[in-house]
Image (spheres, rainbow, N blue to C red):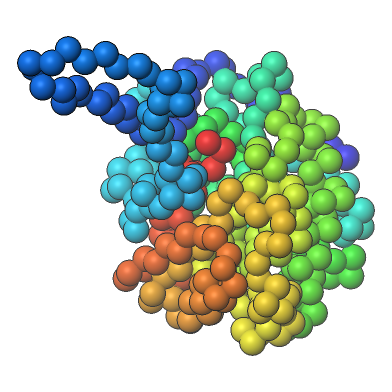
Length: 329
């Protein structure tokens, strides 16, 4: 195993900004005396009455629903003075699942230090791309994230962009047939067996599902569902952007699960965000079928529809604007 430019990851210290989480309302109502002024009234307050003050706790999913925006602000990807924008660094790990050395890209906060534990977001690319797409200039993930952190709207986190095509016989995707889909589906084993242990060994990682998220675009959206539903005990936040076919039966072959199994019988995530574009000519109405199945199964989730958007990077940015603000409260 070799690691390139590992020292870059401990970047110069920046300003630490904390998440401005959705506030909880705690209204307190003080009863006013209605006794006639001509009478002297003695009021005895019991212990039970002292607990009559009400506290309203909004469920986390509803807090996220209130935050959901169809489109991101226009200046989301503009760099600002005084904000550091670290770059993804390419690393390599020995993949037992693929039987070869495999690349992945890692983004750490500007003031990364081993004295602190960081939550981790895994972002998954589409069928025709590699680990470099989500980490590239087109997506501008570092700019989006660090602008949100600077505004107090997102947590500092480590972001991992892995290569999700996993086969010992085929190093690259050769088409959208059954075997290629199965090779993408095999990524869930690579993530579990190789990538997550690699990250825990080399980075200061906050453990637990409350500190672990996954999202992906297109075929990567299929695989983020695959990962999240296969290991709900490990992933507390799941996203999917314009997901490809075959997540459930009736939407393409090979399919990952039966329609009735598109739910969480235990370990439901804190957040499941499904984003789709209404002008998506690549996957058509497949995301709408997923939304319908989630609703019919009573699976709590947020549905993010982008009108006038298509199957491209702009849909990815719109999803990331929402997802990055919602994960790791």
